[in-house]
Amino acid sequence: MASALVAITGANGTIGYHSVLHALRSGYRVRCVVRREEAVEQIKRGPSIRKFEDSIEYSIVPDNTAPGAYDDAFSGAKYVVHIAGVWPKPNYHPDNEIWHPFVQSLENVLSSAKKSGTVARIVVTQAGAGLVNPSSPSTPGTSFTKLLNEHVQINTTTAAFRPPLASPHHAYSGAKAYCMQYLQSLRKDPDLPFSIVQVIPGTVIGPSELITSSADAYAQMDRMSRALLFSDQTPRYAFGFVSVLDCARVHVEALSASNVPDYGIPDYFVAAATTPAGKTAEEIWTEVADVIAERYPKEVADGVFTIGRDRVPSEMPYRVDSTETARLLLGGRPIQGLLESVLEVTEWFVKLRSEMGA
Image 1 (cartoon, rainbow, N blue to C red):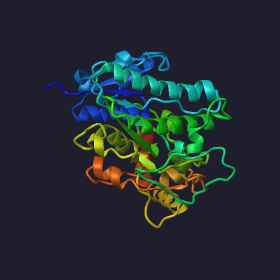
Image 2 (image 1 turned 90 degrees about the horizontal axis):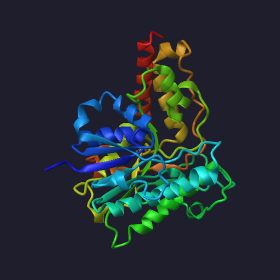
Image 3 (image 1 turned 90 degrees about the vertical axis):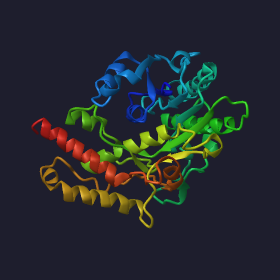
Image 4 (image 1 turned 135 degrees about the horizontal axis):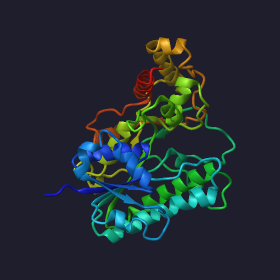
């Protein structure tokens, strides 16, 4: 019997590429859905991808907001992992380049999945941005006063945002909250031909085999690692932390009805490490900074790393509890968090510098 086909949108992105790999290693056939031919070539350059050439195919969707955009991409697929999205860059138009593309692309995913007649489950990547209100006059700080688990509530005020929107941040949070709310309501439809899974990742941290120079590694490094290793700009929001491998595992393992039958799907899966009990955000951050300084004294002394001890994300309102996600999808193994993930990035960066003779 042929292996089931899973279509993965945003397959060349950080989460997408590792989800492709984990799906292939798990025995799925994979159709990588990307927007440009260059993205196909980028994926093909991955050393780990090459051994799976017979199980991988590609579909180019230049405009995911066009009617029927994903019809061909989802044809014959049993599963869809929808990861593709828009990052809220400061120069993007809030309405035309963020909110509308997010919403329309999701509607196209659902429409094409229905047309396919074969899709049985869709996994959608969401974001902690849908839990907060960017118009709130008070900052939540690093209080850990709220709980992010599989039954967290979205921010209904933010879900009601509609264009015209005040900023890219408003558009991103509003689009995510709206889509999260919409999918939750859609799941109640008894005539829906597929089940829906929503995943809320923390900040995704980890190396990439697609990057081969320390300069590119620095340029594309996640904001938490850059803040810790190079005292780069203080991140604003953090809704927990997750290694890129565990984030990919959550997405792919959520496809299987053997892991989670349709009736057992929680409101959300949380792809983020459970917050260490009894620790403040500052203590968690300082611990990682101390370990880096201890393990890489030469790089610190030489100025390669400028440890950002005071770069704690300014808004960390949620304490994460992902034990249900780990139990259902990862055999109970805890999700890897900030310390382990940043150390992997650190080792990767040092290795790239060494290979370049730095």
